[in-house]
Structure formats: C-alpha cells, structure tokens
Image (tube, rainbow, N blue to C red; front, side, top):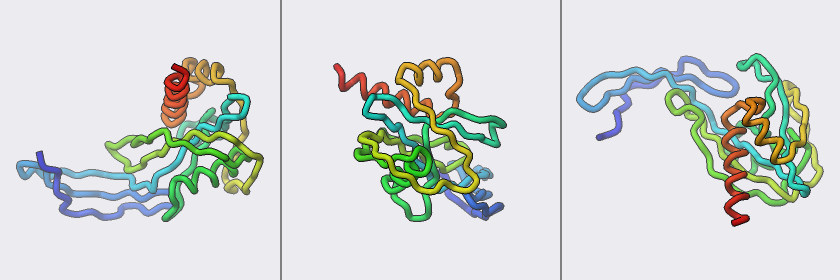
Length: 180
C-alpha cells in the first residue's frame, strides 16, 4: 500500500518546545484525511549507572501529569544537536555527572499517532562529578535507587512515564543478556 500524499501542511501553533501542524493528506483510493501533528525535535533519556550498580533518577514536577514524577533523566534535543552531545549536557544539568561511557539502548516514538517525538535511549556509566546550570524552570531532585528498587517502583506504578519504564526494562534485559 502506498504512503499517503501530503496535500497541504500549515503550522497552527509555533511554541518554544514544539510546533503543531494541520495536515491534509490523500490516502490510497483518493480519501482525504486531516491530521494534527505535534512536531517535536526529539529527545534523549539516560539510564545513569553508578560504580556501585545503582541508578540515578530524578523527581520533578510535571504539569501535564499534575504531580511530581520519578523518572530517568532526559531532555529535548536543541536545534542541530546530536543525541550523544545532548546526553552529556543533560546528564550534567540534571544529575551533576558526566558519563565516561555511553552505550545506545535504542529508541522509540513516544506516540506516533500524533507526535514526531523520538526518544533516543542510552546507558551512561563511568560517571564523574560535573555540573552544568539547569534550566531556570526545572525543579529537579536526584534519587539513587538499586536495580531492585527501580523494578519495584515500576511494578508499583511509582515510575509511570514511558521513557523510564522502557529505559529501565531495556537496561535490565541488557544486563541479563550479558550475564548469561
């Protein structure tokens, strides 16, 4: 089946972090459809692992969720920024460490039905203390969890955002496959 053809696209909203476009597309067979799409530059999420094997997570207020969430550190890509560069920058801003080793864990589309946002996942080890100024609007606290505590937080629903669930589970699978 051929991909739909874009007939028109207009920006309905241009924001600081993303834009919203209204698109008219022609589907196979000539059907005209309309799509509202959040155009996002993408992001990175990190699984920072200490020398002791613990995970560094952050709690921060998430307005859309209406509460503080326990999450993996993450951040939006800046214009033209490579994901690897964003990893080092964001980890220093959010947890006060620079990674000595960065390994890709894949990535995923957040919600491809309505947004272009793709999150690149990385495991960060050989952490060294190093801080960069956080964004003025961030209210972040760093928490250290053992792998068992992180899994328990997933199972209890305390960790409930997709990037953290996916990142932690992919990291656990990676560790398990290396230990076989």
